[in-house]
Image: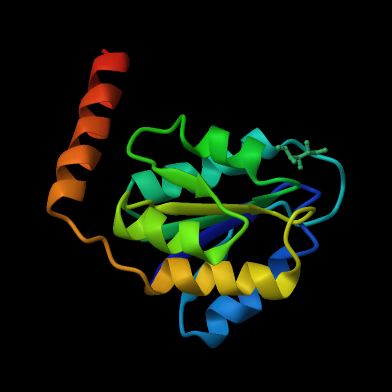
Amino acid sequence: MKIAIGSDHVGYELKPTIIDYLEELGHEVTDFGPYSAERTNYPTYGEKVAEEVSSGNFEGGILICGTGVGISITANKVKGIRAVVCSEPYSAKLSKAHNNTNILAFGSRVVGSELAKMIVKEWLDAKFEGGRHKTRVDMLKDIEERQTM
Ligand code: RB5
């Protein structure tokens, strides 16, 4: 899978561990920054990664900030994005199976690196189930259309 990754300065330290793990699993990863731990702002990187996923350049995105909250809210502002913030693997798995999420976010101040890897693995391995869940995801798309007219 082609995966776009980004963070803010708080998530920056955990990012290389996640990139290495994704590459170990055979994924192709592009890091959209930041490239240093200098103080920055999560909306900058959340938007970059979300645009790359929304435009179809990448099949999925991973975002890391302190809690995962700010950066996932940012990603969800971009059309076509369904981003989830997770601190345990069950929600990560179901967010793909039921909600067809295309971006996973988590917080480096919330989860340790091993738990983060477990969350990533469950999310990547899960498949969208379609059926009644597709009806609901289509309803989300309708809301997006109505709200951006
Ligand atoms: C930065 O201090 C912090 O607010 C950010 O990393 C994130 O947790 C925001 O949601």
